[in-house]
Amino acid sequence: MFRLTICCLVLGAALAKPAEKASDKSTNHAASSNSEMLHSRKTVIEVGESRGLSDDPQPLPKPTTNSTELRGIDYFLLYPGQYYFTSTNHPNNYPNYDYFCYVFETASGYPMEIYCNPFDVEPHPNCEYDWLQLNGDKFCGYTSSGFYYYGSYIVVEFSSDGSTTYPGFYCTITVP
Figure 1 (spheres, rainbow, N blue to C red):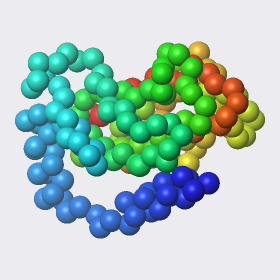
Figure 2 (cartoon, rainbow, N blue to C red):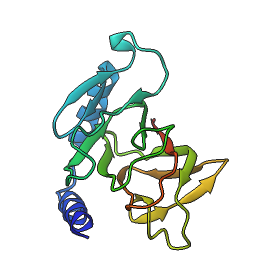
Figure 3 (tube, helix red, strand yellow):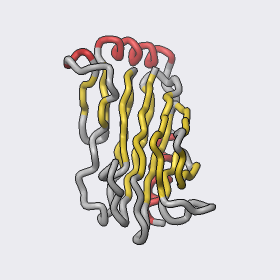
Figure 4 (cartoon, rainbow, N blue to C red):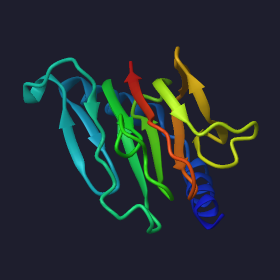
């Protein structure tokens, strides 16, 4: 419950920030055409052709703390490109008591697309045990066809309890 409260407080603070001026948005958009950047609270990672990388999705940094410790919230400002994140140990089962929280925002303000496939998280009618949450919408169970989620600002939170574990998920993020 404490982790959810912290994530909600950060989300509330981020949503309360003043709107960008139109001139600021055009500056950000122009900067993104020179190179694709991935920003987090702790790191800035350049991705895309400027570093000789392929068009394949680029991984987001993994949390480095032990899964039983309270983790921080990683914030990413995403420029055009493709990225991905996975559950811990994917494609093997994620551990018990795993938790992470990411905040993704597009630099342009345009919606990003998150596509999760495969997706296999402990099933429950109310997703009470293990879950992936996107902007407050909880997902659990199994789907062979994956699912899409859209938004220009998305809070991603994952939590597992202390019982059964599953293979988890692989999610790509496409930023236009």
